[in-house]
Length: 475
Image 1 (cartoon, rainbow, N blue to C red):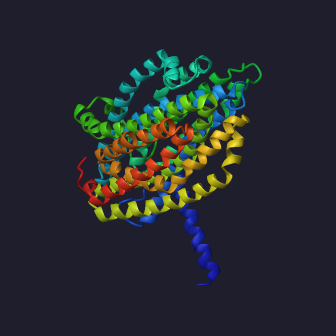
Image 2: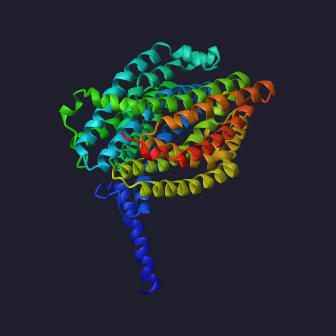
Image 3: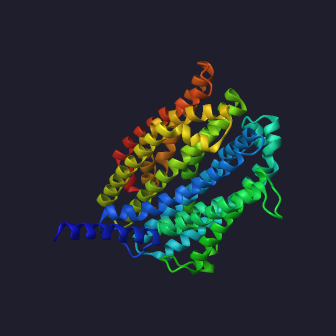
């Protein structure tokens, strides 16, 4: 065989794999065959899915960053996103439970049980989110003030917060239903739903923020409306494929009847998972409030700008690490423990390479990236410092994400919950407070505390991974 023929065969295999990943090939058995191919088939759509989720905040940030009173607008978007992380925590916790149970049932070759479990998760999510949406609408202004916004900034932006929290069911369903599809091994549908939602958001943002023809300029409120409409369309796409798609999961109306035994089993997995992410979210909320009180409106806006950009890079890595959750869940369901372990190592290796590349990009080009999103020099100065300090820990973030998804994919949700509690509340928050207040470092102290704490959390994750409790969990 000639060298040219070998090269053509190699690129042909790559192209075929990419096509399978983007199309969503559910015929591939993740409990047998090449682990590298399994990771790639899951990771590519998951990475693209998470990139699209992070684009929501960046699109809003770009357009509101060029409005009049942009520091107020940026701060409002950032502080609202910080509060929404609690809702993200609920959504991620429920989707993680759904992924674990659905993946385990698929690994056991029982797609009907997988479909029923997914529907019960949706019932729980709708019930929980209804309460949070009502509270968010009523107390939007108080929430912004509590987060450290000035009275003027809160008055300027509370309508944005009302719309975003009030429509949070769309966020919840978008995460949850994607978790169901990922558990079934169809990460492509999850990816496509986020692509559709984001395309709609990108089109609607400039129209609703700045006005177009007969459509008036809604300003900051337009950003909230565009995001809500975009996410709603993404959810409709998901629901269509749940009922009328040709994948493994076949949803029927009777599956929506509450099954309290199944709901109890899901909550048993989801509760510590939700707590796990709430712990992390509350830590980020505290840090945002600490930056706002020590750095003022410009310091807060700069931190929020850097945080949104950092999340743009981290969320794709989280998507890649999600491959570990599906592979671990399905292989444990098929009693393939050694294969589950190999899947973790392969995913972690790819994530380290990705995060190392991103770290170099942010360190070298951070100032240019920041300049694209805001023309306020005071905001730029803080944002550049924040992004460069936080990016130092990117490699450890990458490893930590894979370990968290390994535990969660196995249904061992208490281990990462405990790690997060000690890492965030008993280490990161006190460290940030002492550096910012006691040593008078202000926002810089907060920025330093983030990579230090994330590194410690990752080291703890490695320790508990090696102990192997996750291999023996039953779901």
